[in-house]
Image 1 (cartoon, rainbow, N blue to C red):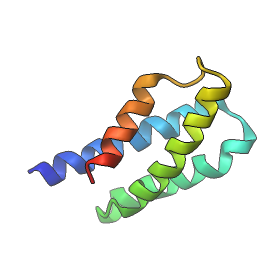
Image 2: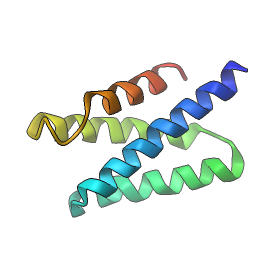
Image 3: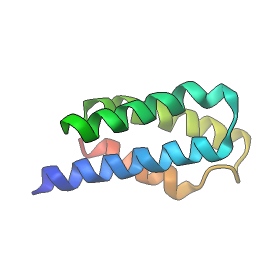
Length: 89
């Protein structure tokens, strides 16, 4: 049961990161955004969360850089949720 819960947690965190990149709307983040969209679709098709973890790491690093440059652009909760989901794999 914990495995399903963990998969839902990483999916939800990656979905939130995807939505944040979409909201930011900056072209320089389009690669991360499109990769997140792809792995989310892939996960929903095959149930294998490996891509979510890989792109989750990339999204986390990018979001942390954005937060450092513009502290109000990315919420602490979003970063915390992503970190927790990645830690529990």
